[in-house]
Every structure is written in structure tokens, then in C-alpha cells.
Image 1 (spheres, rainbow over the protein chains, first blue to last red):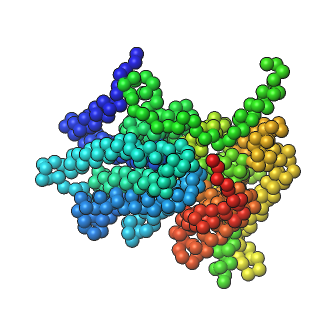
Image 2: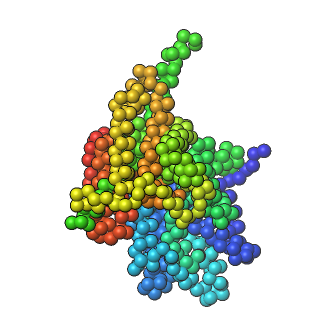
Amino acid sequence: MRVIVSHRAFLIVLFAALAVLPVVANQYTLFVGNLMMLYIILALGLNLLVGFAGQLAFANAAMYGIGAYGAALLQVRLGWSYWIAAPCGAVLAMAIGTLLAFPALRLSGIYLALATLAFAQFTQWVLLHWNSVTLGAGGFPVPQPEFSALGMSPDRGIYYVSWIVTVVLLAFAWRVVRSRVGRAFVAMRDREMAAQALGVDLLRYKAMAFALSGFYAGTAGALYPAVLAYVSPEGFDLFQMVLHKAMIVVGGMGSIAGSVIGASLLVYLLEVLRQFKATQEIAFGALLLTFVLFQPRGLVEFLKRYAPGWAEPLHYAADRESLSDITAAEELVAGSRGGAGR
Amino acid sequence: MLMLSYLLATGVTSGALYALVALGIVVVYKATEVVNLAHGELFMMGGFLAYTLHVMVKLPYVPSVLLAVAGSFAIGVLTDRVAYRPLMKEGLVSVLLATIGISFILKGMARVLWGGKGDYLAFPPLVSPEPIRVGNVMIMSQQLVVLLAALAVMLVFAAFFKTTRAGKFMQATASNPRAAALVGIHVSRVYMYTFGVGAAVAGASAVLMAPLTLLYPDIGFALFIKGFAAAVLGGLTSVPGAIIGGLLVGVLEQLAAGFIGTTIQDVSAFIVIMFALIFLPTGILGVRGTRKI
């Protein structure tokens, strides 16, 4: 049976459900819902950079950590209010993300991937070893912002803040990909040189993609200390890298709705497996591998096929640049060997 | 002066191991234009296999090393079968994502099989831990063994490429896959062996490294990044470059650790990668790349 589900209706229902969740949920469910929104923001940002703009970067977890530490340290060290510290954390992550884009403008493919991977490791090192500023490996508690003026507990209050931020960033991402900028991203991803020939300023749009993605990750990071009341380097380690990547691949690269789906489902799985680090690694590694192999365009493509109302334009390349053209040559040889028979 | 010579000796030893890791990365990259992001985990698995055979099953040293290297070769071949061969037509992004998936699966499996986070397994040294004097320098005898063994691995590796048929097939494929296919080389099989050989070198270096460091499931990534730094410094496509790069990274990080602070050692790789990519993008011995359209 074919179900009619429009991607818009799906997102509206999901966020309406998230909006009423605090009324019915206990504290733990509320926490999971909040975590889900954080990861939706992260997945959106990463998808803009990797899925749309085609820059294979691995520094998302680092930006997430910079946003979180920025917001937390400004509160703890300088006594700033959360409402000032949080935007500063997000902007700091965006600034560093943009700076990271400058070597990226000269690098591509494998070099970019590995340079950003090394940057992620460097950030982790700074969080662990710059004791005098980051308080080292143990992390530190952060006071949650007060919502008593609104008659709400801090958990519930920050939940609604996350909800509003997530909806705004979702709508913004939606607008971005349908704008001139989004089209430039897709053109750049599909073929840089062709995009350049069409007047896409690569330097500008790459920097923009890194800045956007850094801002999203930084915003998710800035919400983190308010949600967990604690930050430690472990929250931003390499495992986050496979987690974020698995989210956008499972949901669908180059799809806004896909980022939301992937993040929501995987956060749930993450919570189910919370006790078992090794199982988490195996599960998320296997999910990533399985989807890349068998459903490379994610669950969204599946929905698009079987749910006729699902009309999100999917921005994937019609044919991708293959790594090697030897298969064609091999087939040619095989054909000439067995040619007599045919 | 004594400290300097000590740092240099340690640096050259760890540098030789980074060179071996870099060698595996370069061989695979030359042939396939892909860096196997699970390379560090292949290294880690090689070390744990040797540990299992030598310490747990109590096999003698040499057979356990050979079996561990064979095991790494098999995992490398598997990586090709699972991640590279089906995806090479899909492009770099897919292959890289698939190898990340594999690296986390291997890491998780190691955690399940050989203990949780923070479990460091000690690998017994091959020789007595007594330091020996060479001229004015004190060297740990294990370091000397490692250095010689690393040299031996490099020589075997060079001989393999120069003299054997399989090695020549690999060279031909790396230099021009289409032409290689046209003269009848089974190119995708060569890719498979290339991944296997890269992994086998990683396995061999893991066995050499294990007594000096300790074994733990997270060891792979740190080494992979250092190996990659060495490979990039050497030009990513040059085997002698990888060896020079490895030695440079090893010595530089020891000097930084000795004169700046030991914690800096962990980020030396990042600094080297960034430096190399920005100021020396073709590496020491790399070939200037042309832009593909």
C-alpha cells in the first residue's frame, strides 16, 4: 500500500509532537527529546556542508565542542549570563569553522578530509590538556539557566529554548538550500570547475558552507551545557564523528528532512545502547557501512519512492565522478576475451 | 647533549614505525587514490592478534607474528571487498564513509574481545629491557630490535615491489590502471592485494610497536594520524618519501616533547599535517598534481 505522507506534514507533526512532549513526558524522556533536537541541529549543519556543498569535512564534533566549551567557560570563568555566553559560543565555533575553511579552499577530497580529521583530534587535545582554561579531562559542572520567571523548571525551560532554536534553524536551512546559495552549493559539489565556469565564486561559497555548518554545530554545542549541566571532552570525541556522519547518511545526504529523520532515529538508538560503548561503535559503524553500500541516498529516497506525497527535491548528483575508470577497461578486456561466444 | 641523543634515538625508533604505517597508506593511495581510514584499526587488530597468539595461546614469537601479519592481510582484503570494490564507482565520499564505518566496527570488536576502555595490555619485550651503550648514547635494546626489524620490513617490501610479479603488477596498476587492464592485468584483484599488503605492513609494525607502547583499542587512530602526517610530508605518493616523512615526524615529535613539553607529542601530527598541506602541498618527494576536470 502506498501511503501519502508529505515531507512538510511529517516535519510539522514531528515538531508539534516535540512541542507537547513536556506535558506528557517524564524527565528522562524530556532529556532524550532535547538531545534529539541538538542532534537535529548538528545533522542539519553537517548535511549543508557535506551533503549539499560536497565538502568532506570531519570537524563537526570539534565545532560542537568549541560551541559547548565556549558557552560553558564564559559562564563559569567570566560569570557571564547564559543568554550572552551561548550566542558567543556559537559565533566562536562559526569563526573557527570559517578559519578552517581557508586551508580547505586549497585542499579537496582526501586532503580536506584528513586535515579536518586532524583538526578534530587537535581540538580534543586542547580540551583535554589545556587544564588552566578547559579544566582538563574531568570536565566541569555548568549552572543551568533560570526559568523561574516563567514558572518553569530549568529542564523544561531549556527544552523550549531548544525547540524554538531548532525550528528556526530548520526553517533557515530549508530557505538556504532553495536559495541562490543552496544552488551554488549543489553546483560546487557536483563539479567544481563547471560551477566556477557558471560564475560560482568557489572561495566565497566554500567559506559560507563552512561558516554555516560551524554555526549550526556551535549552536548545538551552546545548548549542550544548559541541557546536560555539565561539559567534558568525552562528549566531543571521535565517536561523535561516526555518529554525525551516520545520521546524515541514514537520513539522506542532501536532504533537509533526511537530516531530521536520521538524527531522530539515531538518537533513539544511541539511548538504547547507552550502557555499551563497544556496541555503540559496532552498531553505528555497521549502520554507516550498510547504508553507504545498500541505501546510499538514505531513508529519504525510500520514502520518496513509497510515499507519493513526499516531494522534497533531493539534491544528489545524477552521476558521480568515479574513482577509477578501470572497470570499463576491464569489461572491455573481458568482452574481447569472451567475444567469440557472443 | 645526552638528552638530545636520547631524544634522537627514541625519535628515530618511533619514526621508523610511523614510516611503516605511512608505507601502508601510501601503497594503497598510489593504487586506488583512496586513504583507508580504517588503516589505524588494521594496525590495532594486528597488534591484538599477535597478543592473542603469543601471550594468550602461548605460541612462540615468530609463528604468532607471521599469523598476525596474515590476519591483518586478510582484514585488508576484506576491506577492499566490502568498502572499496563495490563503491569505487560511487566516488571518494562513499569509500571514505565506508572505511570509517569499518574502523568503528573493528574498534568496537576489539573493545568487546580484548577489554574495555582504559584496559592497556602489555606485550612482553622480545629482548631484555636492559639499555645498551652505543658510543655515547644509551639505547633500549628493544628500540634497536624495532629499528632493525622496521628496516627489514622496508627492504622486504622494496624487494617485493622490484622483483616479484605481483609487485610489478601493483606498480603497473598504480601508474596507469587503464593500461594495466588493457595488457591483461586483473586490476581489481591487484587492488585487493594492495589493500592486503598495506594492512600486512600495518600488522607487522603493530607487532614491533606493541612492546614499546601498550595495546588498547583506541591506539589505532592516533597512529593513523601520525602515519598520515608522515605520508603527507613525504608527498603521499612516494614510498621513500613516506619513510623520510615517518622519521621526520618521529624525531620532530620527540624534540618537541623534550624541549617544549611531553603533551605536545600528541598534536605534533596535526601541526605537521597543517604545515605540510599549507606550505608544502606536494610533500618532500611528491609529484606535483594536475587538476582533473
